[in-house]
Image 1 (cartoon, rainbow, N blue to C red):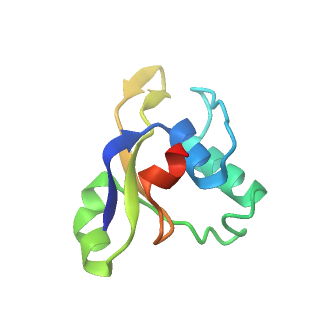
Image 2: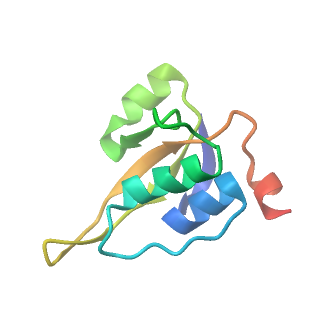
Length: 101
């Protein structure tokens, strides 16, 4: 189930999942950096138990009943701006109210 009506930045997603603030560089592999932060805080292990899916995989996300939020991972690649969104898993009990407290 989609757990939020908002689109998260990578920083906001990691903060919601770990409680810690991170700043990501535009020239890094943002997906890899997100997973490193989640592992550092014990949210996932080295096998990437928190999955992410391309935006176009919404049918798979819905069919599997996954709890996800949408994360904007757009950035520069090969000297050009690339717009990209991905679905990132969140815990079943994830709520924006809990995040804002």
